[in-house]
Image (cartoon, rainbow, N blue to C red; front, side, top):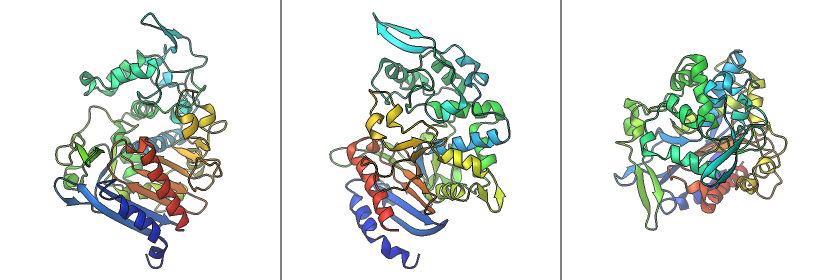
Length: 398
């Protein structure tokens, strides 16, 4: 890395101070012009077994899976197998009669017809009307929670998932609002129906194998079992073990492949994906995806920022001011917004629920991937500030 390492002294100090009190372990990798300029790791991948983090460790990436799945959809769009404006019900007829929540009276849910039908683009921009149980505090979110947290549904197939969601009302009419949701899971099911392949096989054939992302997928390969990390949550004295590396559910194939959050990857693998985005879709001289499709993935597709079109009761009204939504992740559209840490116009990024993060800044040819396994810490103020500070220190180091 040469003299580059000297630039990152403050970042390295900050990261060192996070372990072990804040995080059990972490990794960060920074590239400029698709070449490594900084790598740092500290701590453990398994605290209780005293196993140190190593560079080739495999992490649960949760919602960082979404960018990979949306890229897969762009492959199908370029092949003219599907269009952004296609109705979702063309591929999932089970959704033909979806209604929109209106009110809840006398223990009865009142619904109305949607003002318009949802499209593939609505799915990719989280404007389809779906939600997550945690995205808002409404009756619809409660109903989603009853489905997704039901122990009897732990082994749902993709068809079971579709059947259950088809019974629930939409939170709003497609296109009316931005709301973080299960929409990329639905997108993954559509990819499977169009391609005739499982989502895992499709992504491997069309993207992962071509990028040599051999540690990435929806299950940890048997030969990578001893590279897997454990997942934790914070308590007053340290960490609670949520999912151990040696007997995790990720070691066997899931009942369905969650395009919204079921992926695993390594820091170098995910950087290969970031480099693919930086290179306008070219890998080893082969154009895997056109530069136009890359631009669509990474440029704002909303009329304004996420905060402006979020539901008034949603925390994203304030949390995402200054950010737009591309077809594959969030985009900085107002770098001067006080809510936003130091960032460049057009910077493309997203997070994972265990506090992982990536961003791609094409203006300066900078890519960054951060990996750790601290579940849901990102949803609190401390976790959000930590990731903001890391991004700021990376920018200030370059």
